Amino acid sequence: DPFVQQLLATKMAFCHIAIPYLLPLDNNKVKCSVWPLEGIVMEWRNRKGKSCEKPLTRQPMHVVSFMRIGRPSFSKSKLLNETILNTPHDVFCHRDSPSGTNERYISDGLVEMTHHLSSGKSTDIFPEELLFLNLRGDSCRFPVQAEILSSMSSVCIIVGNIDDVAELRSDECPFKAKNTIMLLSDKGRDHMNKPLLERAIEACENLFGSVSEQKNLSKAFNKSNTEVKND
Image 1 (cartoon, rainbow, N blue to C red):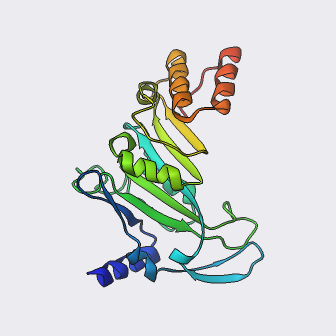
Image 2: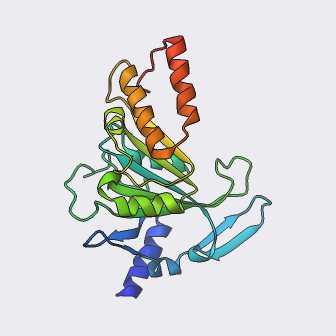
């Protein structure tokens, strides 16, 4: 029942719980769940402190997407919760949540969403309204969702272990985002594996083209011979 879907989505938004946005279907197809979002009305203050009220589906917003490659040693969804900050509890379920390690049956390939609203105060970390999207599961297993998110996002944040990223081929992950932040972990090693890091950087170059920041980081790593800790 579409009206029950809309009611559920409205209640989930009110309670700061992530809402299903892209639903995986058979034959590598997805369904965009727009109608349930129609009932969500946002209230916020803009940069000038003016009070605003608008339906979620009528307000243009920058999109920030979170995806993962392989199985990182840290939780992508937990990182996303810590990025949003101003919520009374976790918006996205993660591995440290109650029952967070239970076997998944229907959530793999699901894209969840939540929105961030500014308060108009100078203390706002994000001064504008943002839409956060979170792809459940390994993005390489769900190329359709990964391509949709990377094409519609202002920024894509992709997390993964260096081992998994170093083995990637450009035809495996259809990322198209112009602005991509790669967060790499080293599976709890005490010291960064420098050759593996260089291979991961090369894989990122093949995926995204220019990666000047990573190159500079690599040069600084080689020059200073610094030990990069797993922080």
